[in-house]
Image (tube, rainbow, N blue to C red; front, side, top):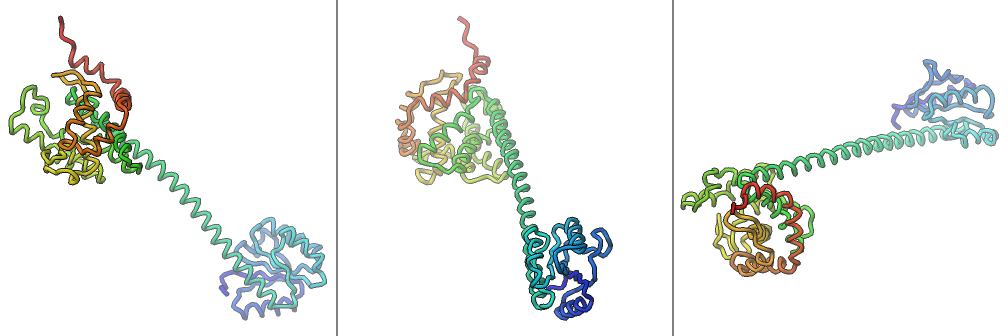
Length: 365
């Protein structure tokens, strides 16, 4: 038995006290013997890490009062009462009241030793349970803090993404709001195709939001050029998917986000850029985005034309099924009522008319 625990042995019978102390010490226990209980606040008072083995011959008298005072001062102290078998009726209430943990006969040293072993085991289990509860409480507290921190970081991340793409869109007022609108289209179209994993759907939304991140590296002289682009300027424009992918990949870029940024100008027939991928070579999320992007482009205001309605956009998308677009995604798009897309556009661009009117005032008659 582990002898770290001190056995506080108290018995008014000096002969029996010495015999029992010797028996327990031979078995490796550390014993401190006394003929009377010490005061609860005295230097010899047992602490709660020890086990008190105390004689309570009749469950009454001054020894009982002293035990009660000690137990009040040390509620967790394990107490083994020594009482003769014929005094059990008088001593049993002490057990029922929780004043003592066990009752054994002082004339059976092996029984006392067995009771001490049981209390040692019980004490060890209680300490393990307390440590477990404390660890569980700490883990719950840390988890709660981590969850709050993660939510705060996610909120900051979302705001950063939206602000970044809004700033990018504002470089060219004709596409202002485009990233936010097309990200919502892509999310809804992905769900229509049967994608249900929330993480994947959110990554598609983020990828759509960031699809044109590479345009930040394109000079305004090219990006805002009012006339036709030269061959060299067009080649610079065509680099923006690769530039955007390079810009974003350093922030732990997930697959769907990177695929949309890098492949959003690939075509189903293989005539897109930057890699000329075709059909299933193009990641599914990029093929989804392609339809969403075209839907927004057709139904948006441009300096050289007004917005076209959603039925016209639907017709154009159907017309290019199998060439520019994946037919399966076109079918999923067409299976949804036009009002769904109209509602999304209204919700994401309702603040835009004033900005557009300011940029493109109507011609004076």
